[in-house]
Image (tube, rainbow over all chains, first blue to last red; front, side):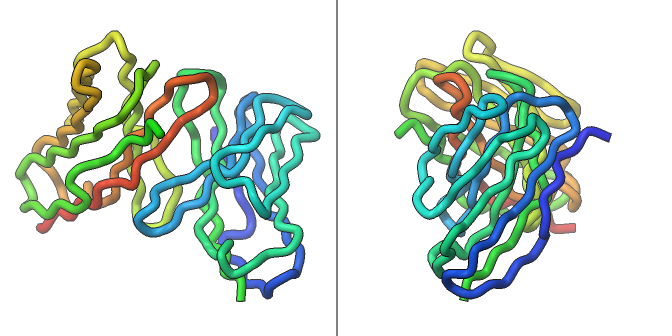
Length: 112
Length: 110
């Protein structure tokens, strides 16, 4: 089954404690992206990757890092989380430009 | 910003009625996409309409695009309680950039 898998589904952490949210897709998609969703603000893009070893900033990249060492994986790293990063995070992938996005189930992050 | 903006922000209708949601955007686009989100879950793609298309259908969904007015509408006919969700439009202009609006929350009352 074609899918984007994110883990964990829920995460509670404390300020400053490094964390990684994993994302994996099994569709051989070149393009992967991370979004955060906050009430009233819709989805905002954090980072995206057009292929292995190719990443670029989205609209809200501050405080986040990503890596794309393999085509299927695109982890999101928060090196020093802060409370304003409390949000619902989504990973997504697609096969190319002008195609639809496939989304993961989301990660609800709370930073205390 | 070319962000799509949905209207209304919230919509409550009776089962069996039609639901119409609108999306407006600011700059020229290659395509516009509609997604659905059930409470806190991942978004699911519904339909994609290209800039040279005016109307598309998929089951009970009908999407229109008016590039001269920079607007799109999503019509759900004969709504069901299971259609209760948030609906988002996303516009794509340059390569790899899909920009989402803040969504319309639809409640279908049984």
